[in-house]
Length: 189
Image 1 (cartoon, rainbow, N blue to C red):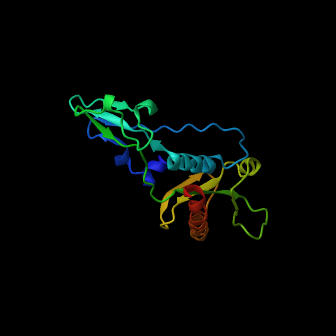
Image 2 (image 1 turned 120 degrees about the vertical axis):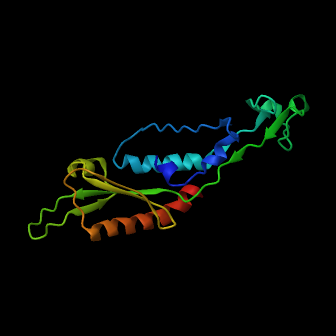
Image 3 (image 1 turned 180 degrees about the vertical axis):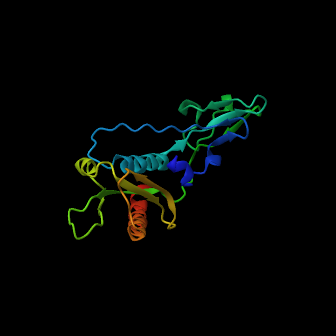
């Protein structure tokens, strides 16, 4: 949902034949080690995978609208043209392409820990909590997803006892904008 709402990819680029066929992109993430902040890492991995995606060359049957993925055996090694056995006026070739990427949605999760200082009732904000820190916060956290255009794409608050002041929300957003600037070049290259 976050990738779609962030305008990171343009869904029209997934279309093959208007009104008839389109690519369906599915990303599966297998967690090997969960030491906290899993959602942030998963979103960045999904975006990196989309940045590496290259849609294959296809042939579209002009009459039926059917689509066939062109195998490597059917491609000429020099310029990617389709060999003559599949190249006739009945079929239209569509070049494979990478997706045009928009601004990277960069998440920043902050755990909200209760203050032990009785003179100061403000909660402690802990950026990028580990699994243990997530447990200590009793699930009270805030995640802001920002991009380099200084837009807040999404804002999630988890837990019932995390009450943030306006100044704390501004601080989290400011950290999110900084994180977006920092990570966009690393993920998009």
